Length: 274
Image (cartoon, rainbow, N blue to C red; front, side, top):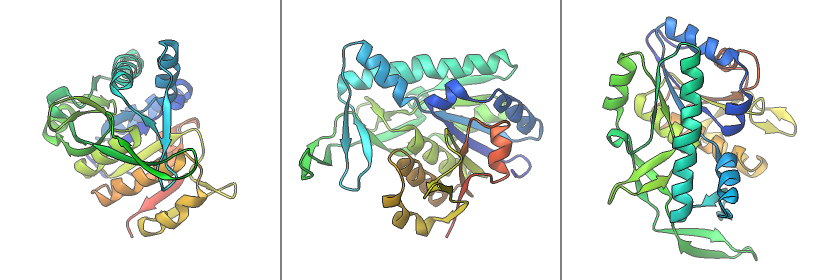
């Protein structure tokens, strides 16, 4: 469980936002009553894709040489990404929490320089023939800093930060796509969180149809080729959270009753330091 006055950072994806068991909020209330400080980071890639396509902007996805798939974010896509993540999904979460008596505030990396990132100038991807090619990096970034002083002020006031995975370029403050799982890992690592929880639509990391209960950070890389697309990025982020300072990461179901309690009871996949 979480130590007294400890910190829990958890990430929910778009499918979990729409399908989260209502008991999630009850879990949050009980943790807050115990003195736990909560931070939410959210995703919502499917919703971004759906709205972008309705707006006439087909989405392009690329694959790294390691087999990791991601969205290619040009300027127009970056604007749609920020609009959906920060304007729709983040407010949807804040509204749901307010309706149940919890105070929260939606944030992007632009708010008080919460998330600063280095823009990726070039990306190496695999083309249709499986060859490595270099392309423009677009509007994606690698997080370089987290304004923990700002977060700490909110947490000390019993306000739950709800963070969208939109960071600001360290050079010119352009809005960048930094991926929800990566945003969660950096926030958790910077805060030295007692636990980082990634709530998903599965019971944990599956291998041959069974949940892997525990993984040491040093053993993750060799497992990645056997893990399905989407979960591989989540597992990398879970490892990074631990390597950057979080005590442990847990990948667990967001659709079970009392999902946070379930995860903190280590019903899922626990990633611990080597």
